[in-house]
Amino acid sequence: MKTPRLQRLRRGISLIEVMVVLVLFSFGLLGLVGLQAKALQVSVNAEDSTRAALLASELATAMWTNNTANLPAAAITAWQTRVANATAAGLPGGTGAVAVTGNVARITITWVPTGTPAGTENRYITEVLIP
Image 1: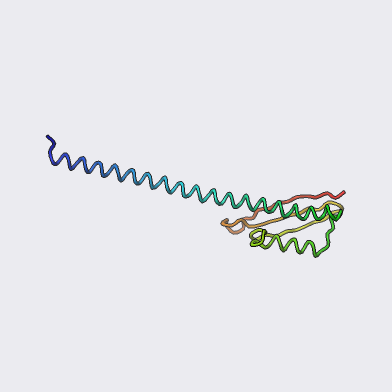
Image 2: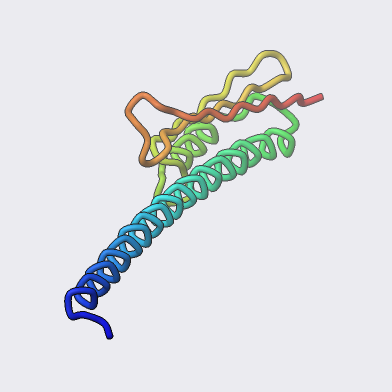
């Protein structure tokens, strides 16, 4: 026959086991939340990189269409405005620059990824040769 003291001890040990399981489960959930936040940040950065490539391709297409690397200043200014407008398919803190040397245009797009420390920026550079 079990004594009441032994039964209380067993109940106490079971309570400790449940508490340990809850702590371990909580750490696991916190790890999953952190992993989800990191995955979301990587996804946003990939989307920004893709958008930068599309914006550079847009300007390169205009150069190919006009058969010149020297586009009118109004076209470049309109493109730079689109790059800077993050709410309308642009980039956060985005700037666009074009340097033309002969028939080669160097298109540079820089932006500040969301949720990164100040002074951090990404850059996308492409060169277009117009024969």
